[in-house]
Amino acid sequence: MAYDFRYSPVVDQVGIEERVARFNTRSIKKGSKVQVLKLALNMIDLTTLEGKDTEGKVTQMCYKAMHPHLALPDLPSTAAVCVYPTMVKIAKEALKGSKVKVASVSTAFPSGNSTMQIKLLDTKLALDNGADEIDMVISRGEFLKGNYNFVFDEIATIKDLTHKYNARLKVIFETGEISTLDNVRRASDIAIYAGADFIKTSTGKIGVAATMPVTLVMLDAIKDYYFKTGIQVGMKPAGGISTAKGALQYLVMLHETLGNAWLDNKWFRFGASSLANDLILQLEKEAKGVYYSKDYISVD
Amino acid sequence: MERIEVLKTYKIFIGGQFPRTESGRFYPLKLKNNMTVNVSLSSRKDFRNAVIAARAAFSGWSARAAFNRGQILYRIAEMLEGRKEQFLEELKQLGYTPAAAKKEVEQSIDRLVYYAGWCDKYQQLFSSVNPVATSHFNFSVPEPMGVVAILADESSALLGLVSVIAPAIAGGNTCILLASESKPTCSITFAEVIATSDVPGGVVNIVTGSRKELHSHFSSHMDVNAIINCNSEKDFNKTIGENASLNVKRVFIWNRNWSDEKEQGPYYITDLQEIKTTWHPIENIGISGIKY
Image 1 (cartoon, rainbow over the protein chains, first blue to last red):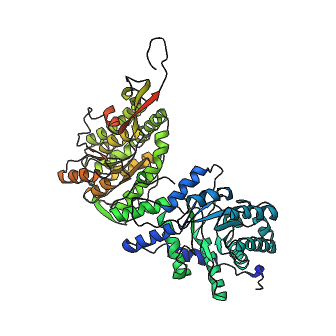
Image 2: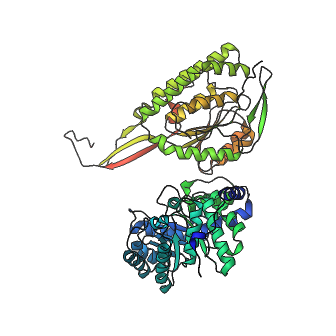
């Protein structure tokens, strides 16, 4: 489908911010709150992406993904774990028999500064090790130069590979680096048209991570594409969402922008690590009636 | 033209900031000069937010060098001394006689200096090396409990809260204090003193409101490690004791006359400490045969 990304819709920043402010006034209590908290937990990509990651750390995190908090019965598992390609095998092994997926970052994460050859090898390594999902980063430098075809082609190339392995592709823009909402919209259009299964805000490796305005712009891009083609694309805000209250606000926004069809971890994910514990804290509060303490929850 | 005086809004003190209560509620308090002050009627959510702030501040504050904590407590005393006049005036508006107000402020300052001195001394006095019959170096040291919730003395506007906050933070704890319901204004002015004394945000949190409404939340919150009630209400104390059992909080009923010079001492610090004992394996060393 021909689409000139230079003419992506421009974004009304004030309008977006006002809309976001309205989402944040919604109040969800009691039974519905418990339901949404569980849904949010079920949408988490429990993440560890550090130089100091070890097999032990990844194995432990996988256990947490499958059993977030044993003290509460019938809690869902998280959607996936998100690790570096070298840790995929370990995660796969640890998650055997569970529904939790393994997502792997690739394409020279987090900077994306490498050759296409290396990026493909990086992705192939993750896929050969059994990754169900690939979180790739775009070349922000090329994007900011206006080299949109380059960005489109690199996404499409990686998509060809993930498609062969039947893996889903998430495309990370690092919205903190591409700065403006107009750029976020343009990057969203490029990624969606190039075949992304998910679009994702951030790597979590720079100061500015996911924000609600950025996410709303991306959701709007998904909505426009859906109306045009009938094809659903997923959304993953990542980084900086660490409280249950924040997660609930994201879900309100998701519901009011894309509707019920997206309220499922097939179409929406939170890239987070400490969020899980805050959700558990609030679920315990709802269950026990008193404010709970992290002393009684496993550290992530 | 006659100038209109700018009056202060009495808000609450959470995490080093002065927010209004999230509930938007207040209660009117009539002062001696016939002015009425609207005092924040804090809710359980304000308390919850304060606990989050106190918990976040705990690791940093308890890791400070003891000597540095002493310096900061002394700094609070300095700031209080500098704003003495303001406190004297506020106390008078709450019904103190000039003499009683002067005594209240001066004792508060002195008490802060007293506990400032204890910051780097109580550990030595209350630590021990313990004789054991195995080859271990066995020693015990006091460590701060964590987050301390305080229901301040109803009868005292300033000294009552200083006398409890000081030993709590001298020992490396962080705290949330519910001020006297009938004399709350000084607590917020004292929060301004704290805020300008290099006390990290969240170490001391002060809310105003109803003890009847909040005592059950103060005592049931699982992330609070100790609770102190400086009042003698039997039914409140029963609820506090019961709720505290949820996470085995330490409970103290300190219904004291804080203007008594005897009501200060290192035991107020150590009450809010847990003793950690370490068994450290060693070889036989030294010619005396002593194993450490």
